[in-house]
Length: 486
Image (cartoon, rainbow, N blue to C red; front, side, top):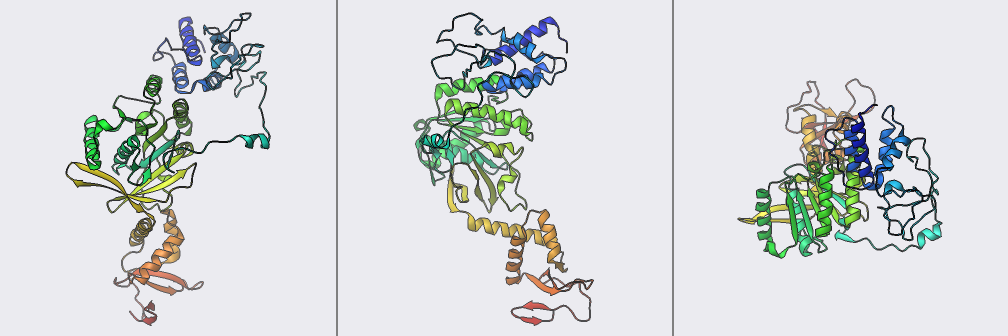
C-alpha cells in the first residue's frame, strides 16, 4: 500500500497519539481507508488493548512491514525514553512501550493503565509471528490462591444489580422499562425500595437518556415523584438527555469519563443501549468492542451501569425470555444481570434471566398505574409463578385453536410436531390438553391411525363443533367416566 508522505506522517502521528494515550491532534475523517477505520477502531478500545489490535489489523493490510511500521510510530511519542537516558521514578510509561527498556524498572507497582515489563525487543506481540522476551505467565499454587480473602459482593439493588457491575433491563418497546428505570433512579438516590420490594443502596445517580425527549422525561419524572410524595430537590440525580452520547465515539467516551470523575456517581443508567453505539447489533465482534469500552468505564469509575435494551415480543415462546434479547449473544455473555419482561393482563412479568453472583430472584409481577391524576406508581405485586404458568397455558391454548380446525380430529403426534416449531414443550402441551379435556372444552378419542397401522393414538377436537366423521358408527368418546355416542 502506498501513501503520500504527508498522509503517512499524519497517520503515524494519529496512531502514536492513540497508543500513548495522548490527545489526537489530527482529525481522521479524511484519512483514506483502511486507515480511517483503523483510527476509529483503536479510539474505541481501552488503552491497554490498542497495541495488540493495531498489530492484528496491520497484518491484514497488504504491503505493510508491521515491525517497521510500529518502530516508526514508537519514535513519535515524546514520552518514549531514548537509549542511554536516565530513568526517573516519576516517569510515566505509556502502555505502548511495555518492555521498551531492557534493564530499568520503577519502584511502584504497575497498574492496568501503566503496565511495564522488562524486555529488549519492541517487536509486536500479537497473533502474528513476532515474539518478545516476556517473562511468561505467572502461576500460583492452590493454597496461595485460596489464601486471598475476597470481600463480600456488594449490591446496588439487593440480589439483583451488583455494585460495580453491568446489567440490562430488557423489554419490547412500550412495555414500561423506562418507567421502571426512573423508579430505580429515584429509589437509589434515596436508598429506598425499588418497586416497593428490593432494597437499594443510597448513591448519586447519573441518568443518560438518548431514547426520550426532555419534555417526556420531565413529564414522567413529575408523575413518578408525585406518586411517591417526593420533591426533586431532595434527590441527588443528574440527567444528560439527548446529547448524542455514543460509546462508539471517542470524544463522547472521553466526555463521559470526565463527567464520571466530576460527579462520582454510584449508579449510571443509560436508556437505551441501541441508541448509544454505532456497532452492528448482531455482530459479536463489534458488540465486544462496545462492551470493552463499558468495562473500562466501570473499572475506572467503580459505578454500577444499567442499560435499558430492546427485546422481541414473546409470541409463543414459553422458555426463558433471555432468548428474546435482540442482537448478538455477546450481550447475554457480558452482563452480570439481565431482567426480561413480558406483558399479561395489564401487568409486567419480570424474569431474572441471568444472575452472575447470586441465585436468580423468582419471577415477579409489576404494575404501572395512575392512582390519581398526575401521579404514577410502579410497584411489585408479588411472585409471578402462578400468573406465569397461566400465561403459558393460555399461549398453548391459542396455539391449539389454530392447530385444530373446527370440527376436525387431530392426532396428538401431529400437535407435538407443530408445537415444537413454536417453542412449546411436549410436557406443557400435554398438560394443557389434559386441562382442556377435564374442562370439557376438548374431546379426546383414542383410535388407530386412518391407515390401520400401529396402536391407538390420542386424537382431539374442540367440543361442540360438528364432527367430520361420516361413518356408520361414530367414534366413541370418553366423557365423565362413561362412553357415549355423539
